[in-house]
Amino acid sequence: MNPYVLAILLSSLGLGTTLTFASSHWLLAWMGLEINTLAITPLMAQQHHPRAVEATTKYFLTQATAAAMILFAATTNAWITGEWDINNLSHPLASAMTITALALKIGLAPMHFWLPEVLQGLDLLTGLILSTWQKLAPFALIIQVAPTIDPLILTSLGLLSTLIGGWGGLNQTQIRKILAYSSIAHMGWMMIILQYAPHLTLLALGTYIFMTATAFLSMKMASTTKISTLTTMWSKTPILASTTALALLSLGGLPPLTGFMPKWLILQEMTKQELPLTATIMALAALLSLYFYLRLCYAMTLTISPNTTNATTPWRTRTTQSTLTLALSTTIALGLLPVTPAILMLTT
Image (cartoon, rainbow, N blue to C red):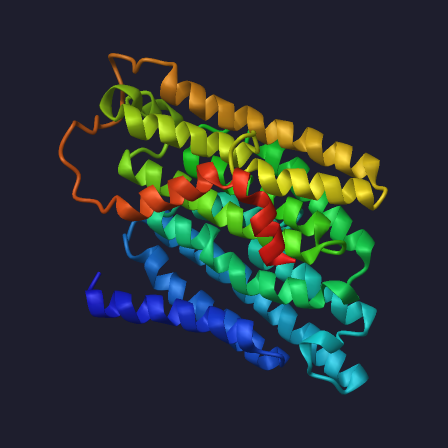
């Protein structure tokens, strides 16, 4: 892609998200979401592969549907109450429609069906943008409207997402689909705590972004998109294989890695709110996710690649990719647990 076109598209992505962050009016927030969608569409379709075009079409249709629902909900609210302000979403019908549309935007269960299919059709870097940056603007709106949403809806979305995100990834062989289900499960953790401690939602979102960035960039560095080609990683790049395995375990929420921090704090807060049953279901759902991360780690570090592989073997050539971003995100994804008190002090 032409670098000037790429620069315009990436700056439009930033502009769309910033517009939604800064807006207090529904129309401006909707405009930011639309700019975001239109900016990422050419990035998704740039390979001109039938699967990429299919993924782009699916993504565009789901995002357009969600945007239309948001506009309809905002108009309904303005019609009933006379208010366009985001924080004044007082009518239950408008608030239910809004949270449904925003859940469709970020791929929360049961509106998650598009996400694994779309992510599977993209290359790893565009998939990274879709899994991290594209979640920010809808999440900003969700956090703003959360006080007006029925707590039962938020709890149902959170529980369903963690269970389906864990369950759906169990029999996958494609890494991008596994990371899509991982994304659904993490979004569930963020939704479940939103009504009680919004700062923990932000903390979970921040750690999720760094851990997912590490996973995607590591797979990009190793030129691998499915479990069978992961088996060549140990003999080819042993250090990258070990850091990637640790990053995946961090995504699973194992101590002493960064990923343990948000899960630990969320379970602690839910226990304080006297929700032991919900906390138990969330902890058990995390075990489902942990199983498929362990599967990836096992394939990556404890198996030797078969002599007859159908994939093109990436030989040990000097890479031209920049490793600075990967190094930074890996450091954050593995080592933030000891500074939990400082992070909590900054977020609360």
